[in-house]
Image (cartoon, rainbow, N blue to C red):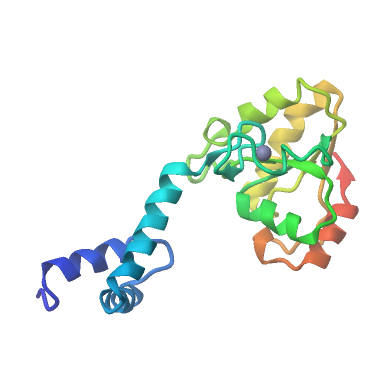
Length: 198
Ligand code: ZN
């Protein structure tokens, strides 16, 4: 039964396709949206369109940015010889919040997962290997401590080892399976300081 009319149902359907939004939340959001002033709705849809059109990957570290080179990579004060490998831009943000890390990052946009059919070619690994042709002292692997994160860490360390570049893994102070973005700053700092060479 189409209780709300075609247009409303379409909006609910679109919203419920978003991650973490069930049918009930989608209905609540849809009703909220149609009661919002037109101008506010336009600001929201413009922001979505603008972000989708203009946010891209940084040419160096692959993080999401609206510039060719992100502010971290273009900051001359950052140590370009230390690269921390993370799974997502949200993980990068978690480390940036600590304000204590002075190196640069590499964002993989995922992790290797044979279960889900995600292989090395599906994440931004090629870009990382290319960066290692430059002057790099250390690669810190800060992927999650989930099965996928550990698999990815192992894979990367095997790739890098023959180059002679130092490879380290953040300490296991990070709870198993815990997403980096939900971990407090102290835990992240301890994990970073306690990193071990692979
Ligand atoms: Zn960058």
